[in-house]
Structure formats: C-alpha cells, structure tokens
Length: 68
Image (cartoon, rainbow, N blue to C red):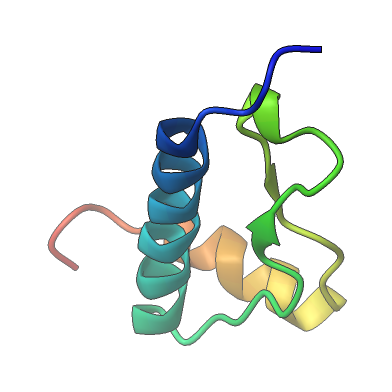
C-alpha cells in the first residue's frame, strides 16, 4: 500500500474547512463533517447524517440565487 501524501490530507482538510465555513455562514452545522479516515488516499469528505430540519435548510440555501 502506498503511503498517504501529506498534500492529499492538506487538500482534503482545506475542503472540509471551506465547506464548514460556507455551511456556517448559512446557519447550517454538519457535526460529523470531517476528512474520511477510512479512505484518506481517495480524499473523501465525510458529511455524516443530519436531522431533517438541517436537510431542509441546506436545500433552501442551495436553491437561492448567488448574491441573495
């Protein structure tokens, strides 16, 4: 198995932080948001599960036009 590259982890962590900040600015919290520890070489982001009300807020945030 090839070792995981530090750059891969750094890029994935940056993606997690960017998504977390964007969600936070929309008033949405994904408590399980993190780098997927089971597959770091694939650079997967774990979103986890959310309550139905959080899913609805996310859907509404995604429906908005940019700049709204």
